[in-house]
Image (cartoon, rainbow, N blue to C red; front, side, top):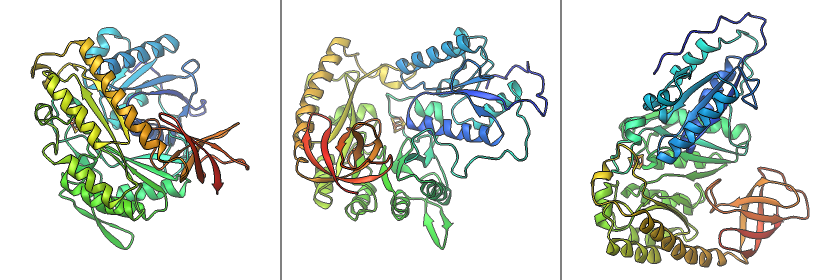
Length: 451
Ligand code: SF4
């Protein structure tokens, strides 16, 4: 951490509540960090400002995963300085403070990812809190930045893998799992506060509990082990949708599929395969890459025919040959995944992969991405068309002239939308049964038939 400048006198006890403007960039994991920081600030009497102008201070929670994300973070810091002038920077880019100070020497303080105490320290020094013992208005579930009806639930931090294209372990450190009872209590409070969908996230969800040797903890009358299957089963009993993200295909992931078939957990698996060629996977040093994924996907579908499988891929990895790319396209046809994202390889500074093979020229990377997405679009369109005529449970995200929501196959932000006509007004967060009448490349259209 770069020490904050002690340039602000203490606030008078009767001063107005100090106002902080907050910018949250990056992935859902960073969003959870933002929620924790904001929750603490609100508990101490700080108010959140809607604009930088007029706030006493701006906090920018940065993302440093890709060079493009770093550029976005630097731009956000620049905007905050121009509009407000008093800026504290935290998050992944804080692990490399010199990149920030080189351009913005005037920032008040820089702290790294998950350094909640350091961010709060920096805020206290730059903008002391107004102490008010009667001001503890923070709801027990904390402050959520997501809409009230869904919430991200972070179960661990950091990662023990060393994927060669990724610098997250050096930014966020080794795996640290939360005790299972803590996670369950947070989930319980969220559900009690109206959350109807829990999105389980971490860097490596399948590895949950490995670092604490799956230590059991007391939750109510039960003893629950810190193991993904046990956690998922307990979450599934709370009555909310439970969606699992970033699940690497370790063998024990097979045990989750029956929970999906029983309806305890949503039949949705977000598995970032990243590639299919064994050679590329070896160079990527991906966890569980040796598992026979096609056979396992087939088996998952036998056990839970409704399962939606989402994944992400990287094309143009250093040294990727035409044959390796063609292997990936063939694999994609056979796997017939429901939802897929594809990125061209970006040589993040510090990633081991940059030295692993000849860089693929940008034009070729882009062409491979286009061919990949074309191939996948045909698959996704075919799979979505099969839903026409079915009835789907849809959680409503937005209302207006027409309501928009998501089926169990759609995670917020990354998947498709269901456009819902209804004879009675729908409410945000309500789960309606919708008869699907039409499908396009990504979205479904239908009419609410059950409430
Ligand atoms: S599993 Fe791999 S890609 Fe994911 S955070 Fe860990 S090292 Fe990075």
